[in-house]
Length: 78
Picture 1 (tube, rainbow, N blue to C red):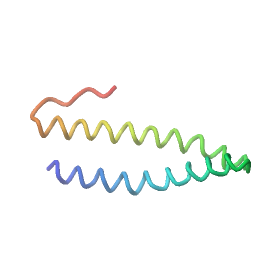
Picture 2 (cartoon, helix red, strand yellow):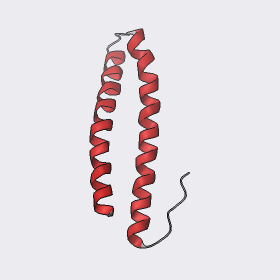
Picture 3 (spheres, helix red, strand yellow):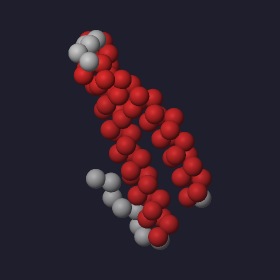
Picture 4 (tube, one colour):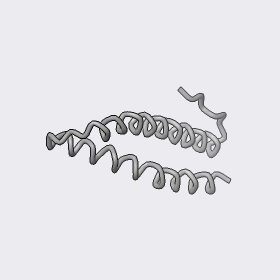
């Protein structure tokens, strides 16, 4: 059961994480090149928040899978 969850989590990380990292990365590159697009900057703030929430969710899932495989109870999410 946990192998399937790991595969789904990995697929979700790739499908959700890669485009978000790419968008945030490109915005940082443009800002460092002193090209400021206010629309892009305004969209980057929610993208960073969504990416942070996604990382928190993924970390919680990994902790739960680890606790399940060692036979311990699930660790509380902080």
